[in-house]
Image 1 (tube, rainbow, N blue to C red):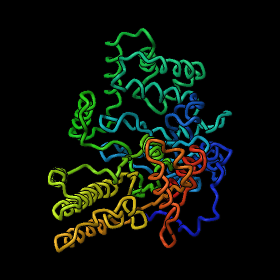
Image 2 (tube, rainbow, N blue to C red):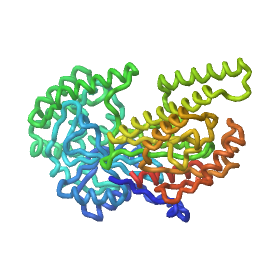
Image 3 (cartoon, rainbow, N blue to C red):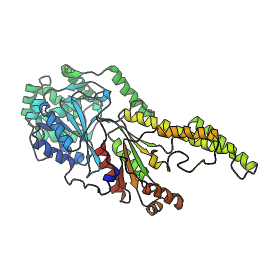
Image 4 (cartoon, helix red, strand yellow):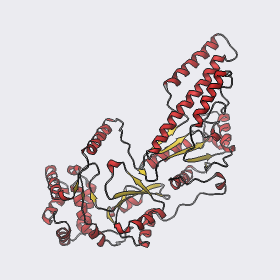
Length: 488
């Protein structure tokens, strides 16, 4: 899906849009009512303050006949479909992510078209009572419609009784359980079980409730879980054993602090993207990059890459060592001008840097092709070559002459021309004196000169988004988040 880019000349008179005063989830609920979507929040309704603050996710059950209307509602509000890794995908369950500009956070709506209990990498169960749950749904003063407390209690107890960590004593589970037990009518719970879930009779259901209470022995909890699994065996789906083994390997690797080969985080259905932050020292781009990665990385596969400082290859290290030795020899012989050998070595080092940047760029593109979002600093674009580009554009290594030097420069240029434009280019512009005040660990003249390069660059004709970095940092981040989320 192409990114929605804006040309720089369209941005000159554009100001940042104020965030809507109504929370995103409240607007979603209103939109669902307007479109008469048949839905309910099937669990977690008692934690409204938590998920309205952007913590955790919201679990909505959507009638399949309302799937198109629900998709329309989420699209109107800027939500985007996000996909987990294939071995973490549950059938009938998808995720939508939206940017709440008030909170500055991504809101996760966990959307269920089927009531699937359990985790994708282990056995999970389809409790096929969606129609009855939706028939019981009503507005009770909260943001979303919720099912009758009897249904919510039944689903809550079954869900937590099936979990492998059942033997743990979790106070938060008891608090929610206590609320639902108090609200639900015991007689009505028995009727619902008898009519819609006969495999779990009322007597056994009471044992499941008791097993979740504090003080219940661990062996009894495990025994109840095993009995419940047998009773629901007609509803079970077992993923391939390899999926379970990969999950176990990931957990072991995490405990040992080892890297996992399986990438974490979801991928947007629209695909990945390479996002470049361009700006002078003191524009706040490094801090912005870290903040953006933290923001997106809570839900999506995200990496921060600094193309200005690529990992040095062995060839680069050898060339650097040779250059250092050549300079020492020049100094030893008291040469006032750089020898041709040293001049060519200086140019060769720039060629090696270009090669390293291109190697890193290939990794960035592959990451984005796999659905990841790459936040890049010092991305080489022709307008920015004076800060990160060929040696001639930076005014360096000009002493090298001759055929070897010409060949090296052609080689260096070839690497940079192979680095294509990013999917989204964000330019943080700041006045030189502001940059000097902010960047106190570098010489003022150096910082001032680089800020002027970015400020005076003509960005016309290139798809770019210009950001006024003179604003306070929270305002800059709000604008960056809005621009990025709109473009993804």
